[in-house]
Length: 284
Image (cartoon, rainbow, N blue to C red):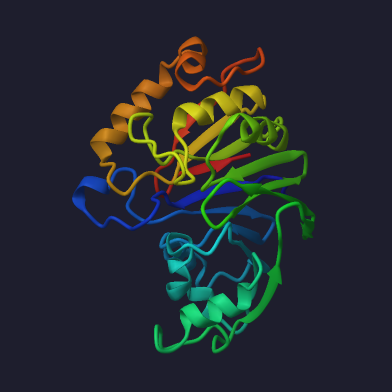
């Protein structure tokens, strides 16, 4: 058995897709990231980037199962479900995991009058699993833990562990002092932290349920994370702006980080900072 985890970025935006020439370098699709391991795909959120993942999976015979983990039911995390090619494959086994009301919400969203094909009309084998923050469950040898995110209407954060690896996905989450401490414990010693880098410090809107890349670096250092993957960028942030932010992040020191964020982290090495681009592959 191959123990490698292949992490692929399919969508990087929050709120709304941006199909524009100014967004081609980092990408314009809304958030979607996949983990592939030994014929098993775990999908983290189903933004419009899910369609690209589906296109690559169409016709592949070595994928045994697909698990889709939905952090919450906001549209930017669901719209890719409309165009996910494996739904039309009668051999596909797809398990959807999300909060209370999962099947009902998806049945309403993807069925008439909003869409001609309902979630129950696809030939693939579909199952629905309601989860709540604090739940733990197993996905074919990958242990999943969850916690609540600080986001309007709520969100679920995920930690995936297996084969000696740990990945934490914390999207649509706003940090304060209490949340920072809890998140640091939840993401402790992760090989990769997928982080909500929706805004710059100057654009951050308290109460909107999002964060900044500077907060992500502070959290990564406090949690002794190896790498932090910044994603869920504001739909207004062009490639030019993100290039500037990425350059700042590379040279940002922890002393400045503490000064600007007020997050006092434990002593340790600064985690590697990666700004997500569609098509990017990270191997764990």
